[in-house]
Length: 146
Image (cartoon, rainbow, N blue to C red; front, side):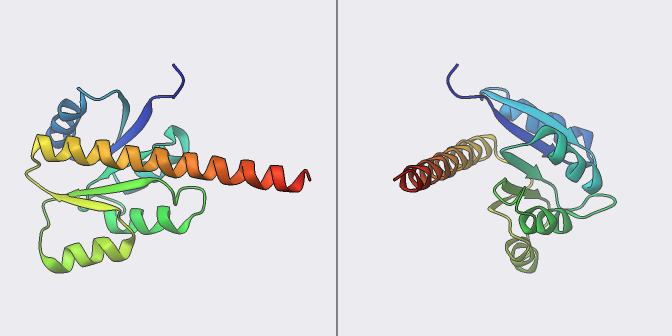
């Protein structure tokens, strides 16, 4: 296989939500891991190195807003795509999610087709960003070698 399998971290403290999201993603060629609270999410990012995080907002220890802000502020994790999946759907919550740095958001209850399409698009976007970065580094190396 020329390209490694994409990694998706599901960060949600509700077992039923996790099972549903895992079932929805089962048809995609992705490797998944689960985090059960905000701190666990940060720990799993370091060990699992996900391409995408499906991030619940209302979680113990650290909220999804706090997790998102921390990940986006850290150069080592700022490129990870974040899709906030939340029962919160007030305009103020959406604005807070955007201010925290989320790449996209979905309201619960989640529609399977909508989730799958957004995950596919976000993973494709991540792959394109990674390829662009590889090409940029290659060009820099070529220019330095002159």
